[in-house]
Image (cartoon, rainbow, N blue to C red):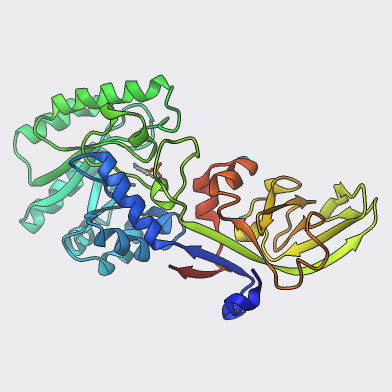
Length: 369
Ligand SMILES: *Cc1c(COP(=O)(O)O)cnc(C)c1O
């Protein structure tokens, strides 16, 4: 592909294509997999960098009614974009001072501690109405949620009567990406204990990885995030489609003799005559510096290795595998796409798809399909 084919939109030299059709199908597949309670959509961090509003509206149309963000500000921003029958829940919990605005804006806090429970209960009393919440329990991750020692007290307060409508009891898996990890089973057992201590409530447990751990983990409302966006390991038995494609323009080409240094530090030295191209994206655009001298981009299905260090605004690639003249100023190479998946990029960079997705910068022209 050449930049003329896309019309050099906004003068951009990078094109991030987000396939909302695939995203919608991923939601339906995950929701189906989750069972009768279906799936929420985790749209924190601007829907893993893909645009919370567009993503949330897409899955709302597919029947999604629960949306998780991390922070109150994300919820406040998303609220006007969704109909009132959509619940927007704040995973990080209820922060002091946000109680009234949560209540007025119809934002649902995930209550993570006795202190937050009391603050939310007080708000309900003061406003003279019932307020919704999800209760999150720590089942072994030591990150967020009621610690085990607070459970008896919470149970006692609920038994005495409460102004809080408990939408569901939830917990989060720490090792869902490792099917063989015993921690998954330990956390499930702990969740079962919680369900007995707080009878009569719905549950919410599995994230993306949890949905692929087997039947026992598909309890209640699932909370997939990364799988919606196509970020699943390729060995998963799933029908999850890629959602993101990234094409970046060539901004210069050259031919250099053997023994030529390439990029910062001169760490790469050519061992034969080499044709090089420089493309217009670097670590400021979310392509980590750890990709230096590793991995590759593609053009017409041909692999073009990254050579030398990743710069802030550019990466140099070896285009010798292609006939001379194939790659020229304005050629678009595939950085993420059918030949080089999000997962490939993440593993080459020594990280996870989440970090690649959320890091994709704002200098790309974004197109939603
Ligand atoms: C981020 C998050 C999720 C979504 O996790 P994925 O692995 O992206 O599916 C679900 N639940 C909680 C509590 C989270 O923090």
